[in-house]
Length: 308
Image 1 (tube, rainbow, N blue to C red):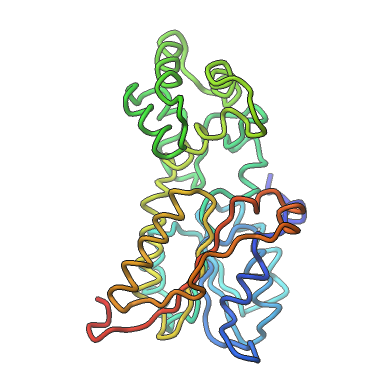
Image 2 (cartoon, rainbow, N blue to C red):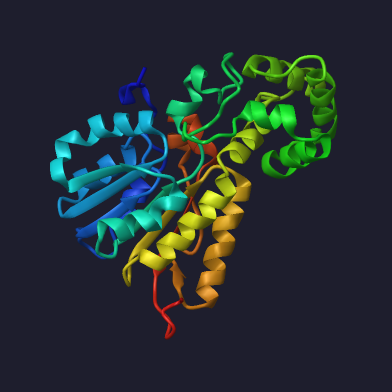
C-alpha cells in the first residue's frame, strides 16, 4: 500500500531551505531549475514551487512508493515538476540524458524518510516488528538480514561503531553471531530485543537506534551516495547556484562539512551561511525529527580551472 503524504510530518527546516535556495536581496524571486535529489514526500519542493512561481523542479528519489506520494502532492504544479526514480549516484547520468540546463539549486535531505521509518513492512523500525529489510530502493539485492546473517563479527562491530556510534558494538556483534548460529535473523523485532538485552534501557533514545541506523546506512550505501551527490552538485550547478544539504547523522554532516571546506580551498564554493543552520526550538517541539537536523549551504563559484 502506498503511504499517504498527508500523514507525514512537515519537512524539516522548510522555511530555511526556501530562504537559502531563494537567493539574496530584498526580493527573493529565483528562476530556473532546482534539483531536489532526495524528494521524499515532496514537502520541500512543494514549498519552493509555491513560493517561487518562476522555478521548475526535477525531483528524484530511489523509493518508488515515496515517489508516488510526491507525485500526488506536487500534481497541482503541472509541468513545472518532473519526477524520476533514481539513486543519487545515478543523478549525473540522468541530467545528461535529460539535456537539462545547469540548475540554479540543488537540495539534499540525507537519511531515511518518515514514510520509510513509519512503515513496519519496510523493515526500518525497531518500534514495530517487520521484515529485516531496510532497502530504500527495492531493486537493491542486499538486505539488512543479509548483513546481520553473513558479515563476520569484527565487521559487524566496526559497522555498528563507525556508522552508528554504538559504544557496545562488540558485545552486540558477538551475541548476534552466537544467536544466528542457531537461527538466522529475519525480523526487526528479534534483532531489537537482542540489542535491548545487551545494552539495557537507559535514557530517551531506544537502545537499538544506533544499530538500526548503521544497518540502514550499509544496506543503502548512504556514505557513497552522499559523496556522489555532492560531486554531482559541484559539477552541474550554474555559477552562483546554491547547494542546500540537510544531514541527520553526525558522520553525514562531517562529510558535507569536509567536502565544502575542501571546495572553498579550491575556489569552487563559498559557504553561505558560514555556519550550519539548526531547527528552532519551536520547530523541534512540533517536529521531534528536526532535533538532529543540520542544514549547510554553499554557493557555487568557478576558479580558473572550472574546478574540474
